[in-house]
Amino acid sequence: MELRQQKILAAIVKEYSETANPVGSKELVDKYRFQESSATIRSEMADLEKAGFIFQPHKSAGRVPTDKGYRFFVNQLMLRFELSEKERKMLREELLKLRAEHELLGRKLSHLLADTSGQAAFALMPHQASSAGLAHLVGEPELSDSKTTKAVAELFDHIEEHAGRLMKKSGSKVQTFIGGESPLPVPKNLSLMVSKVKMKGGKKGIIGIVGPKRMGYAKNQSLLEYLSKLISGAAVILFIVAR
Image (cartoon, rainbow, N blue to C red):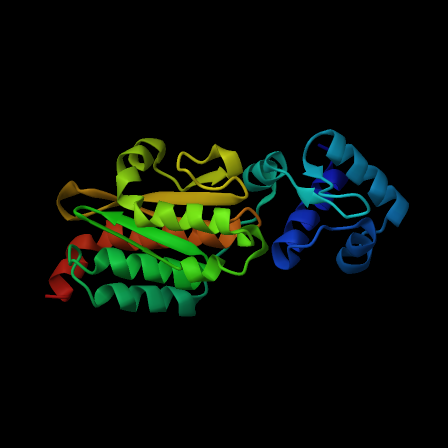
């Protein structure tokens, strides 16, 4: 993909992430200050559409990213995001209130993930499972129909049943599953991000975020990495301090 097309795709992902509305060439020129004319941007968007990176949801509408477009963005274009020191401090302080294997750890992790990301989240710890943040998704365009909302609710009601499958699919880094890539029964207009965590005594767990495909992947990746690091690297310290 040429550099100009990469910039256009990145701008479409960003704009759609913020507005949930199809993106037109005029918006890109006006808001993202492309030097090229609107006609040139339209031509490049047509090429991106032919290549399967974006699509037109209905006639006379702008374009939105496809799963292929999101995958290219996450793998090739996404910039590193750093949590603010305020966010890091809050996460550290909240976790220091608990024992590393306290029965509330999973619940605390899922709520921290949900509240900080603005998405739905879950934590699958040894002998405990917790989910939170479904309310964040209610009202999003992706969950406008009752069928999708029900599917997500059922997934979270039985999230512990998927621990083994997620453990097999998760590697040493944060894993991002876009739309139909998900190993879980997640509606195809949503994405899943998961990370392994190591507990005291070598036990392992999984933390994850579920949200629209237009979610903030960079921030969510940074959030999952930081929480995993806090738990994995400080499990023994947390256990001692919180006793």
